[in-house]
Image (cartoon, rainbow, N blue to C red):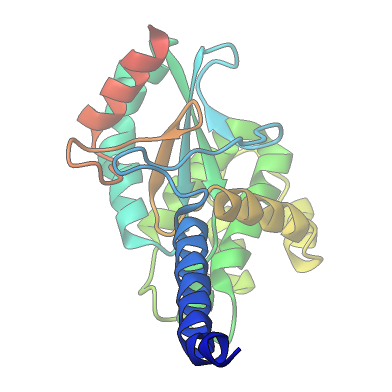
Length: 235
């Protein structure tokens, strides 16, 4: 009896130590759960019905570009890289490029007006009236007119002015669409798709649901890396 009592503190310490070890292992397993392996990149099960795109509807490969119209790197991608992709892959019928709007910069900067979202809403208003071609035209207009990402520049007034340069859309219908926030829910749905895929920067590029990566295993939007991903998706 006395011997057992003398060993109780040691047994208690052993039990506590075992429980702590089990807890630490469980926490470690939880921390890595659902995270991609190094170099695996992100993946997304994107719902692309009603998402603007350029290219042939039956093109076998889907390129999804996650963009914010206030993002200066997205402007570089659209102006400098997208034309090369269009020549090599879109115009040849190999791929189509979707623009999935992820309006996060205004929120990140805590701006008084979420003009990232307003720009996205305006772009979808143009799309609803003029289709893919009108959307692509307005997208390019938005990037050419892009202001500093830390300031509010995509106001409804400014967006209406910019939409005036898009041929073939009803300006009155566009203004009503923007003023009533008619496309806000769809922008929110696009934002959710991006966040569900784990996106944390723009532009982020996916080919057939898999993030485009550089040789280093980091996300990439270079035309060479995107081209390799498109070629691999066709095999």
